[in-house]
Image 1 (tube, rainbow, N blue to C red):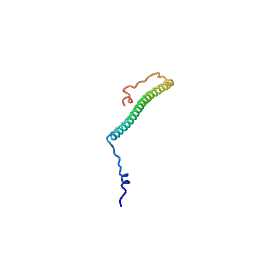
Image 2 (cartoon, one colour):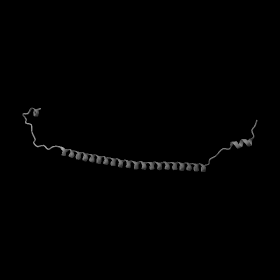
Image 3 (cartoon, rainbow, N blue to C red):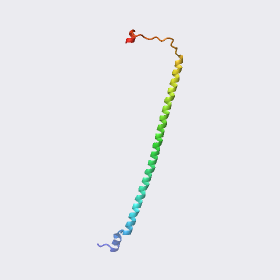
Image 4 (cartoon, one colour):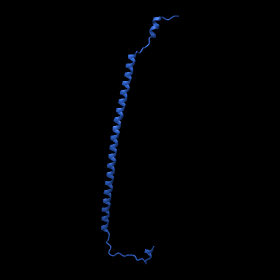
Length: 109
């Protein structure tokens, strides 16, 4: 059983790439890859910029927090001093100071 040669030729055709087509395809692939690389690198730069900006904000907030903590400690110490001054007003003044002598058994201990 023989096949019809006309039908067989239709299926036998192949895709041939010439030197001009090959150079065009190569240049196209290089251009597409270059564009992809540039887009990814620009995205990375934008993310790094955002990251640096967030780091600066974090450092600024930490500095402000430390400043506020010292201010709170300062104000708390001022209120403690005022409370102790108010407590000192209620104390009775000493009229005479009695010192212990060295012969006392309490002073020798």
